[in-house]
Image (tube, rainbow, N blue to C red; front, top):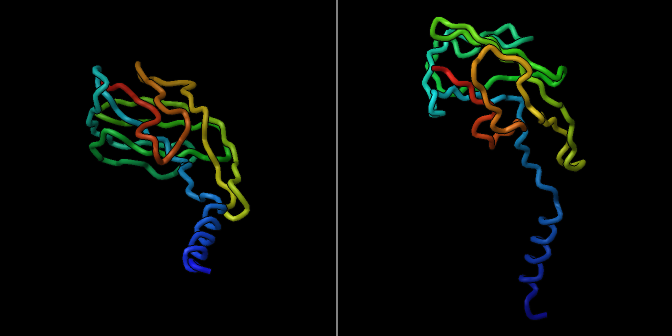
Length: 145
């Protein structure tokens, strides 16, 4: 045999290609961006954000243009209460929770999709990406004027 090393390397590489890709980009964090009337990012002084079902207050005393807020796999909706710049606004989101299995080697994970706003006190909002992913820039935009 003239190229035994080459054949061994080729067999190893093809075996690696048969294994599933276990990179999971699903997340339970909703990425919310604050924008101005021109849909440009807007830095907002947040006093705190309350998430339904959680005792902790998020982003206390922070100046931010985006926030990442957790949602729960046990229910199909979340309520966020935003306290900012002497104002209080709410957003109620609905979503679909779906377990996924890539392969027995990778195990199971949960995806959150079909994100929608069922109720809000913000005058303008836009769902940008309806599936939660670590790759998404933003899922929801809220206009603050």
